[in-house]
Image: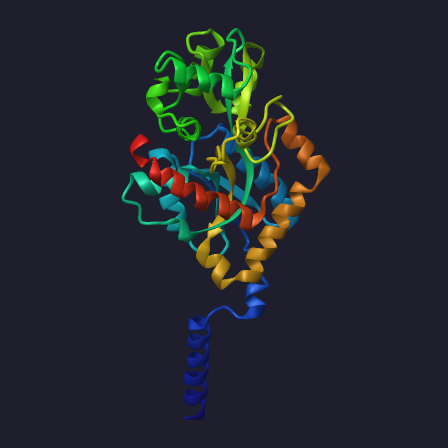
Length: 329
């Protein structure tokens, strides 16, 4: 009788333990034996290269293997959905272009997720848009170009990629000058490469595209403004808001470019804050390693530390801009 009572009690304790939330000690055991980075885009692209470089370095710090898997499709929607369905215990992270792809997918599809389902850790590599004219045009500033657009509506041609941040930043800039998109002839190309070739060859007067990719045609263009908070060492150009200020115009909210970075499940941050902070601290530490940063730079990969708060601020504020231009997506 006593043996039966002891067995039942032991079973009850085991069941209770299984159903009880993780203790503080158990949470301190993070990281798990394996971590997976989910890339919501195809292999070989900038987001994939960033994720794989980060995984290789971070696994050294965490002492556990980090694998990278690609779940592409639907402009990132397939990968985002896959990630949200994975355990929210810190064994899976979304390592991809966290902006604007997540926001665009939410706006375009009947997504089962919202921005609140993600805990953004860092936007490591933001490829800001550059406003650049063909070098043979007479325009020395954004004011010059916009004045010409106002004087001869529809004459100046601008190349963009449909649904890109560059297309929306162009419309925001036009608005700042009191113009609409009929002031210029917007020519769309299905790839950034084709849009850049058009401005380099003089088929269009200006392009608004990711700045990193545009460096390949730098000798054929003149940069007028960079859609970023700070100037770039790679371009002799003011920020977009500096360019507006030079003409006595108010600052505008600028849409960030393609931001490659890392996000966790919001539930992981909420339920395991110490483990989440450990991941944040580890990420920051590897981006403070000069040798690793040099390796990234050599591969043409950005290594900026924004942190959770600033990254989240950019993604959420830009969501409102994307929502406003949803019809143009």
